[in-house]
Length: 130
Image 1 (cartoon, rainbow, N blue to C red):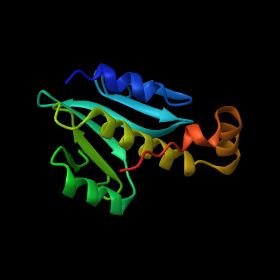
Image 2 (cartoon, rainbow, N blue to C red):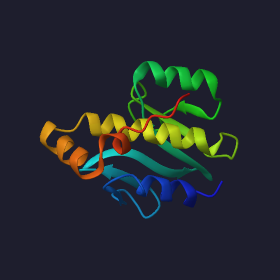
Image 3 (tube, one colour):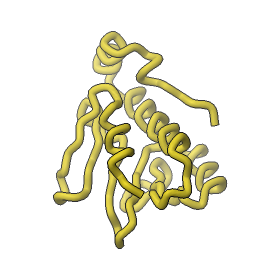
Image 4 (tube, rainbow, N blue to C red):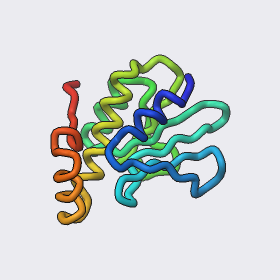
């Protein structure tokens, strides 16, 4: 699966930025300095690590074989999506939205409220139905 589609969606999130702190091919996506996604190629396979509420993380792993405990992350709060083309793009985007919203909700109140004023809560906390 081409990771370009996912990169564009990640960078379309309000004030999202892409960094390469580890090497030239491991992309970290942050909002206001806090990571909400990591895109890595491991053993020829693209993985997208996303933050997730603990109970929902387990549910997603039970439902989708492409969703696994996150590679090199806290497995209670992070999942990896194996980008092999089997998980629908809409579901991947829903999980990206969830990760982004969790991170924004965890920001300091003044930073979070600034984002809400600039972009609107409906854009920041976009939650698609499962």
